[in-house]
Image 1 (tube, rainbow, N blue to C red):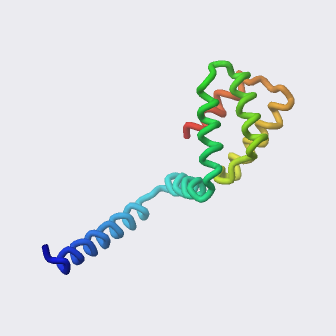
Image 2 (cartoon, helix red, strand yellow; image 1 turned 120 degrees about the horizontal axis):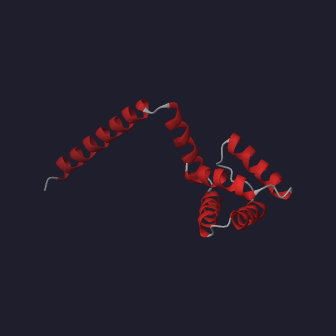
Image 3 (cartoon, rainbow, N blue to C red; image 1 turned 180 degrees about the horizontal axis):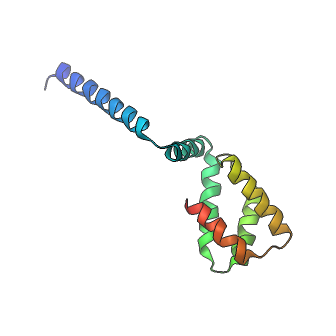
Length: 119
């Protein structure tokens, strides 16, 4: 094995990977860029990963919307609204918390909320 040749191959592979990634970034749609930015924010805030995982877990643990709403409400009150959420999602979470305090109909709220977690 020639260490100089190996180093050359490694550097060429790195340059090629950078070129491919740059091209892939250029081809992203606005929606995909938004999702990528949100995922980057998720990586920056490790506690948010814990909160999101717990929210998803609780969302699908029970088939009773009232129970799910209660669990999500409890998690959000304990940990707060995750920082990686978009401004719109943060507003929706605040509305969820407010409506949950008013004892809004969880059969109406929870399917939408659960769908948002899956997006």
